[in-house]
Amino acid sequence: SLRGYKARSLGPYSVGSGKQSLGGSKRVVFGGELKFPVPGLEDSRDKRLALFVDGGQVYSRTETIDVSDFRFSTGLAFEWMSAIGPIAFSYAIPFNDSSGDNVEHFQFTLGGLFR
Image (cartoon, rainbow, N blue to C red; front, side):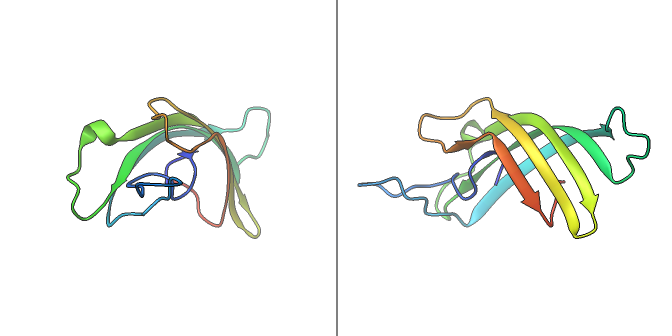
């Protein structure tokens, strides 16, 4: 999934009552991060901030990958390499979301950081 969008919310949907995500068999995901120490912390080797831009989309087997369908977000993340594993808090702003997209600004990740 992309930061700024709810997990498993991108890609094809069912037609009819309720908008159910169908998932997909093809995924395009990309991003970039600028990581830097947390200002004011003397020893921040295990803590850092990151500015990020993420993009991508999910497609069914029969769909053609179309760049105009891609969704993008940007934001700020706090990453901590804790004793129980990596932890991240992200605030993302989707900047080309569609009317039916499930946007989620705040996200928490435990055990795997966005790279």
